[in-house]
Length: 386
Image 1 (cartoon, rainbow, N blue to C red):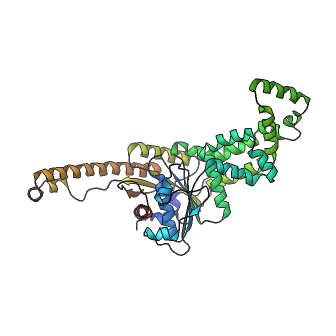
Image 2: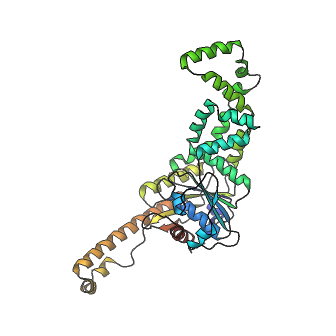
Image 3: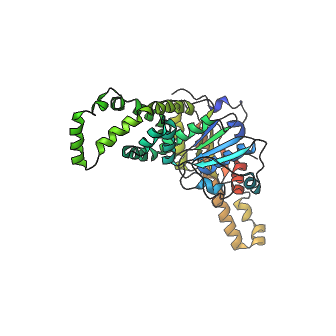
């Protein structure tokens, strides 16, 4: 896989730490990747919000079925196509956007995305309906749609090709599936270009010759064994999909190129704890082995150092002013906060060394979940440094 050209070293001047907005400026696709449970979806929404504030027309796409993106945007639900977050809702959350700035969002419906793809690639409505109602297609579609990686890249290609958005922010599956996400286009093209499928769908090939008298004997045997018209469904499916396979492979190749394009950038997100940072470092290494260089790392839910020392809290003046019991409790809280901040500092340093995308951007830990635009604004402010 060729280099994507999005190495952080190519975007940062020597000795200067760019802001997050400057780091991702010029991107058309921002892929947010990392371990599960570290706040990727919320940060993807914050990235979209931050760039919309700066005048970009942004679509945020999440594969998260838990509706965290809808919750963060303060809406009941999101559909399988981008919906605009209204200007009124943004204003009520304290958001002001520059001219042209818009925020759109959607939650991926894997099966519907796959069905829609068939509908666009089918040469006519008859072929489309013939495929969509076929029992073999239903089984294949459920299996493919169950792998969110493929449908995510299919939706990414659809949105990027539309030209309707300045930036697409893609919230990816957890990092254990990140390579599956990158491999999805290649797996699809290899399947449809494979010899077995080509033999079946080639008009003069073996599959079509099975329509002769011998096929009836085979079909009859299969019916007796399976109790269903499996062979007939299989033959009908591959005959109908013959006109669609070229579109599948062309799209798979186009998506593979998009994932490594210079205008596509990868942002690695992790919590500054040992497990998530180790997983993020492994992900970064795997990406680099493929010639993809993460342009930024984000340490989320960072505990800040307390603004007072334990010694100050336990001083004679403090004990006199607060009382010994309250002073003791406060000293314990200060010690715990300092220990958490020290642990996080170690994790941030590990991210900086392992991801090798410059100094990680940090977002402070917040109490509770983000459930509205105002909460998302606080995340955005921490990330973009406002």
